[in-house]
Image 1 (cartoon, one colour):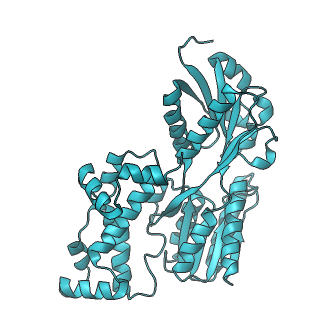
Image 2: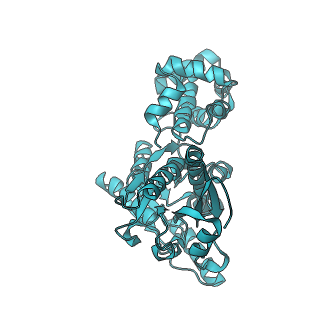
Image 3: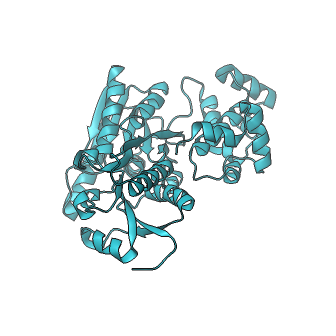
Length: 394
């Protein structure tokens, strides 16, 4: 055992995606209020189960958070934790016992948000791609909600769910199947992938097959892994989930059950934050090509600090004629569209408590935090802190 004036909790994780680090950030945020020490336990090599009880004894841990959203998350089965107070994060509720406490993604939100975006863009053919066979519960939830939404509007739907891979030949066979399936999809098609990794794979195949993105194939991922999304080609539109608040809430629940072991189990879900629009989906529909080009440019560059003159330069003729044409097509001035996109991103980042207010300013195209605070107050009639308190979870 290690002596310390702080209680230690163990944070087990199975995922290697950016999401678990956001969940860990939420756990750290709560830990600071309770003087907890958070010890991260990485997945053991070889796919074996961790030695939970020995680890808990070694660290003299008061409780555990078990992040189970990665493939193989079922290895963190409740029997391993015994009587140690534990909260499961991202686990499939179906395989948890009735006495288990958990925080898992809501079955609602990802599919509906993606369907709404693609329907508004005018698509009539839709598809879903899973990364592997034996899809996790959250993948099935996303597919079901997406399929229900597009079928409700009378549109065609196709799904790609590959079989398990055990050899290099089977990996290559799966790749060939996915490529052929994408090529055969009715175009134009709006596609949702179970997560950003599956979506990035689709974009790679589209490039190889010379399928135009986003005009012939629009692609939406989920989880908003920013490094992956922003380095995809084109940059990947993705549904952001409130992972940081999920980690914070799991810690709150763990605190409650360590204080009162007789408390009833707490079972909660966490929501989506919103859609982060990038180049893999259209910037508009039904407008002339010049306007669509301008909208795409604004969406992709608004937070880099572009001005209306930069957009107008993409038109032939004078700035005044560019402004008239843009307003006629969109109902807004060019600078208003730039501001709309920038504030859309500000609001999304405000819902994610892992982002500081100062960082949001630079990420969204304002030179200083003070300039953003002034603009935000003028637009919303309240401070950024007040807006975050009213709209952010956790």
